[in-house]
View 1 (cartoon, rainbow, N blue to C red):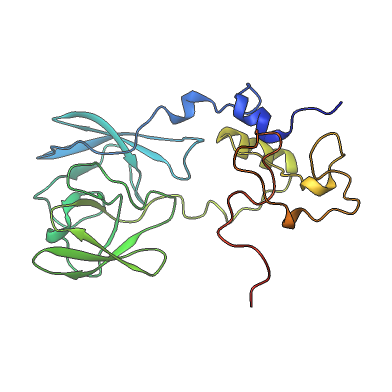
View 2 (view 1 turned 180 degrees about the vertical axis):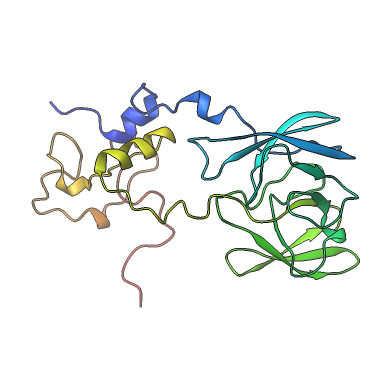
Length: 232
């Protein structure tokens, strides 16, 4: 008799596949209403994020944002009407062209949704009366409302991937912190009792299309493919 395959075990949510809640306790976004100035209380590390976290204090309270490059504790940052300087949170219409920004709001007041990964940044490309064009890290332009806010600067943690992971065990714990499965074993290399594609004798898993009402243990292969067959 076989045992439950990995997607069944992950779906159940046991302690093996459940993420540690404490690493996601900080919500990285700034308040809807900001004015005046704030101060950086602390730079914190987080296993759930690819960048350090900055703990900021303002008149509206304490909030957390991705730290910017060369940030120091005790540093003051300014909101809304401050100068164009690293760490300041400004409206896109007040930021000149070719300025590097991150943590950009999708809509005015949402606290920042875009560009939060370590070492990333976007560049202000064009400013018009109704919208601002931003050159994203993917080298594609995206348009935002002129009143959307962003943080001036570059996200810290750019050298995160420069140091190689020398041991498989370290890689395992890095992924486990974020509740990501690693290493991923190919289904066809498993035993027959562990997966429907197991043993690999006379099977071609790429041609298997899972039924839409199949249970998690049998729903493997091509899940709701848009097309099948050889491209011509």
